[in-house]
Length: 97
Image 1 (cartoon, rainbow, N blue to C red):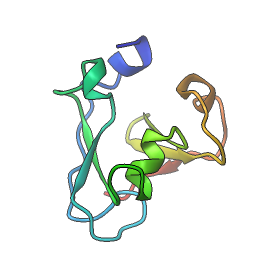
Image 2: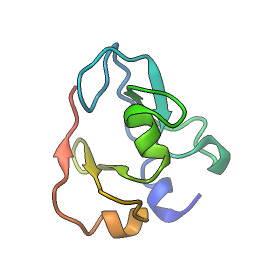
Image 3: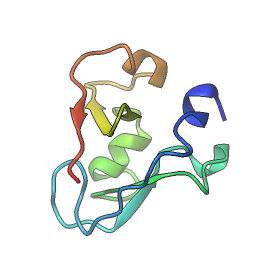
């Protein structure tokens, strides 16, 4: 787990019956910090899709990023971007809650 991921571990989860990005019905909880990197007990966000589809797929493809600054925010990118680069980009939006 890197410093960026570590800083997110105590943030609240967003578990809904709909996607926190687009609002369509969903039941797939995405681990903000991957379980494989120590995030099993960290926050999750409900997203549409699964595997490589929908917003869940975008998160795993690194074209959807999450940060927490007083609330959860997201950023969509046209191509895969490393998290530390995404943090410096403009266009972050507040998640549905």
